[in-house]
Amino acid sequence: MRTNKNLKLIIIATIISLSIILGLSLTDQIEKNISTYSYNFEDDDVGSYPNGFVGVLRDIDYTRVIYFNELYGNVAEIIYLDEPPINPLDNGGLELNTGFNKATEGIIEFDIYVESIVNRIYIDICQEDIIYDYRDDVAIRMTTKDGLNIIIVDEWGTLEKISTFNVKGWYRFRIEFNIETGWDLTITNLSNMKIFQNHFDFFHKPEYFSQLYFSTYTLGTTFYVDNILITTTQFANQVYPLDIYIPFIIIIILIISVLFYYFKISKSKIKITSNKRVK
Ligand SMILES: [Ca+2]
Ligand SMILES: [Ca+2]
Image (tube, rainbow, N blue to C red; front, side, top):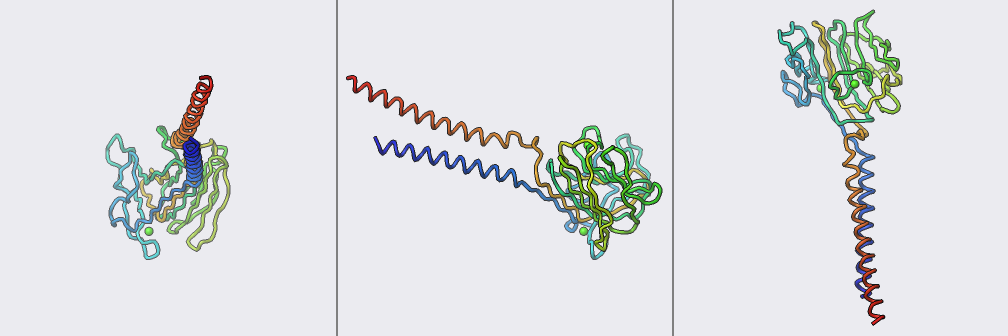
């Protein structure tokens, strides 16, 4: 009888210990969840549409991989020179966009080179909006308005001029975002000189980010993109509400069942023992 009791205690202790270890390891995994997405276009065929990218309701013929030079190798060329076809779905323009896991924190970096620009190039970090809403996005524009300027949507929802740029020159953009605290933008030139660095608050607080896209809607614009690196350091809560809680619920149910079973057995034994005494 004593051996059985000890065995049960050992089993219960083991199950509880394993549950705690499992729980801790799951918590650890959630905290350290990091995803990276890297695109340098070196594995893409020249002339092809870049792998891992989509064009939403735009003609993908305006985007292809080209060989740029020894330093950059292959890059994505976004060239909008032809009149758009007569197609009600194609409202003109082009987009190069890629998705990533819904993130509440992350760093997005890329190189961009403007060959020629008419009006505007749009750079957006956004959500899976059904109706496009820029107010909770990271919105950066390269424009020809009053000179060649880089502008952003600031915390008041207005366009703010932050820097100038030159055509035919590479720039590296680094955007570090945290939906709680805002976003930091750093722009460096080809010589690795910082031409801009600042922190911005969001106009509207975003729930998450899951897309990076480049676009233009004016004929005569050509630009190149390379070395895209997206690192998301935390997944948005809405992605895994059940994934987090289900293992913990199972663990708790398991512990309660074991304890309930153990005490029920112990109680019935006491009953048997006391019955025997009466007899
Ligand atoms: Ca490249
Ligand atoms: Ca949005």
